[in-house]
Amino acid sequence: MKKQTLIIISIISFILAGSCFYAATRYIDAIALKRLFAPVVKVAPGKVIAPYEPITRADLVLVQEGIDNILPDAIRDLDSVLGKRSTQTIFSGEQILQSKLTDNQLLPEKGMARYEFPLTFFNPVTELRKGDYVKVWVTYKPPSELEHLPEPSHFRKSNGTADLLFTTQLATVRDSNGTEIYTIRPNPLPSPDHMDAIFNGSREKPLLNGEKRYQDYRSQPTALASFIGLNLTDQQFTAISEAFLYGIVQIGQLSNQEVEITS
Image 1 (tube, rainbow, N blue to C red):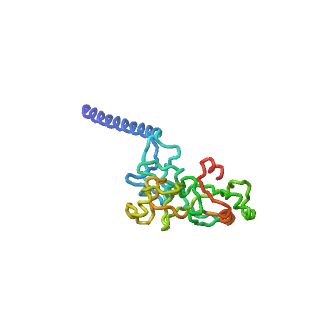
Image 2: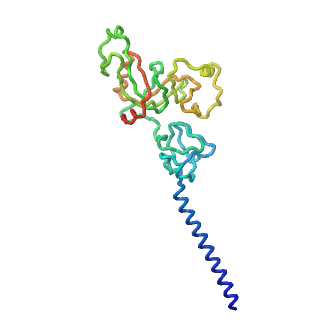
Image 3: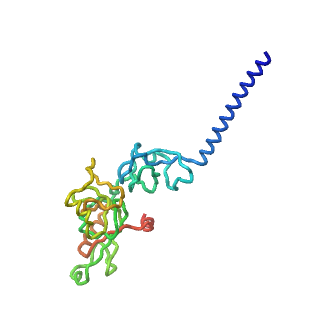
């Protein structure tokens, strides 16, 4: 009888010791996981987030990533990403960075309106994309062509060569059919591949929503940019309209430092 009791006590002790060891191991693993890994939001396998398209739950996955591999600006909460838009293409497996997201559609703010101009009215001096912060200035015609014009009424002519009119955000870039193409390059003439796409038709598969997407956000579009849209106040619109009489209106991207100062 005593022998059976000892066996039972030994079995219970062994089970308790095993349970304690398992619990301690899980606890240590949990502490190590918490210190060495953290959740981060990534683009789901097989998904690509295109510029300025709403991000859905199907586009995302929350994974545990090594602390050393998580980027400083990475987002760690799924709900804070849903419904926002990326300002550039984000590929499968990439971490979602706060600096790449926007929750607006570049709609005009209070006191502004969307104005679209033919691209021929402007001279882009840098590569531009939808969403870029840009500066708009006028490069004056030769003095002989301006001598019969009065001083401008809606902007101040302070330099004989060029004057900055204002800074704003490039809200849209469209081709001649009104399709969003995202990017403008300052090339005076299109490339041979560009022209081939114009005369012989694009070799891209048709898109359901009519937007042209590119793997590289700044790649050369397959259609010529024809219109650009700017969100302007009434004063900015009258200034730019008057500037067309005095010279060539140029547009170029702001540097990161200039964007910080402006904003």
